[in-house]
Length: 274
Ligand SMILES: [Zn+2]
Ligand SMILES: [Zn+2]
Image 1: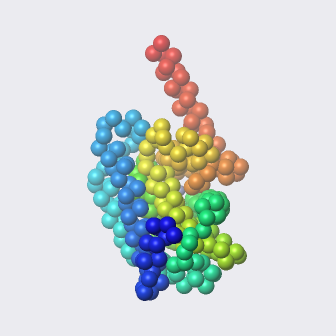
Image 2 (image 1 turned 45 degrees about the vertical axis):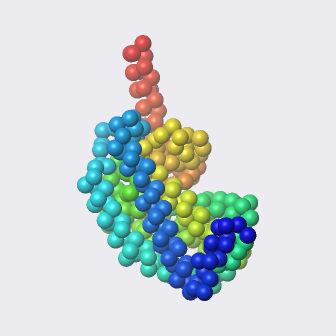
Image 3 (image 1 turned 90 degrees about the horizontal axis):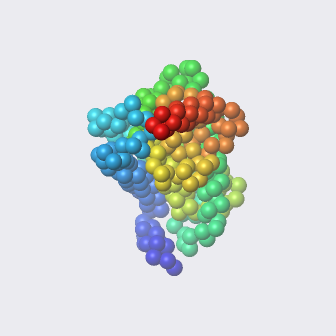
């Protein structure tokens, strides 16, 4: 048994499984979400990092705005996401999810299951997000998330409660569906997926495109540069993780034209300097 498996076992030993699951999910969500924002807060304070900021003209990552978003997100976590997490254990158990059992599934199994969750969430999010841009839905629900045309990490979960619930289905729906049909999923795999999903969401809203950012070494990954355009232009790029749906359904045309314009402007500037 590995150290992490024996630690996992000790967490559940002689305790209420539903309560331990609830605490594990909620605390890990809080720690991972806010900790993931820390490197970007540090970057905000470093003048040498400002050249990696995607939008140089619109500055919204001020201390005042971040404090406002921090408070909103914390309240949303406590009064919306926490009750949703309470409902997770009974549903997961009734679908056959392994909770406290060890050993954990082999890494190869975790990888293909998590890949399925990424694909499912991305497809679900693409259509739900596109629907949220429809007139009344945008006006009454999604507009709040678009308060930030130059987003920052914390703004990832700054959204109307209806949006949090609907888009949350994309995150948790994959594991529950998988579990329902295969009865072969572990809570540890689900939590690993949720961690990666949080990493993805905060990175996408970070406002920074570093040379080491994911899409720079994984070209089909959406990343910050893709989603930042969505916030800046209020259109195109509806997906979360992968670029392929926007490409297939033609919702990246304005984005590609913008990138092309940026490229030719850069080339013209370089020529002038020569
Ligand atoms: Zn949007
Ligand atoms: Zn967003």
